[in-house]
Image 1: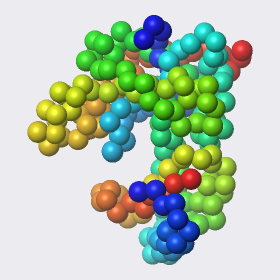
Image 2: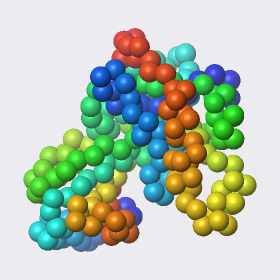
Image 3: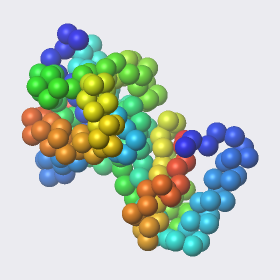
Length: 136
Length: 82
């Protein structure tokens, strides 16, 4: 993966986003994110997610890919779910390695629970809110 | 659980009606699978409020409905797909 950052659509309140924006829900095994590519502006990602029905004042949080490597996570290409095919092409999921998921299974610990305790706060701490992402 | 067939949709409608009838208000989690964003949350007093939420959602979105009186038991959430 050649890009240096990935993006997550977050709800902005008083100029900030909440750490909960990086948590997994029960049943999920990876945090979905968008690769940053120069030919697709973040405004297109915002529009695609807003078009799916996401509400609130939306912003884009940017996370360096190095943070995922440091946390032992893999970024895996995954089909996007919006109505915009070009935006969907950018989707990746941050996942634990298969080995780590096996260890969690043997310990009878849900992936989302481990992720929310171990990973989500650290991603929230390094994520930066982009300024004016809706302006091309 | 995503409910695609006409018979299953009517079953889903019946389940939604029963949930609001017996256990309102209902906490609605709107998930956006594979869309790079966290869920939205709503508290609905009746099906009319739920319908107004569903109307403006795109395809691929999942709704997880929980009675506020039974939040501990996640397995009993009613899941509907759009």
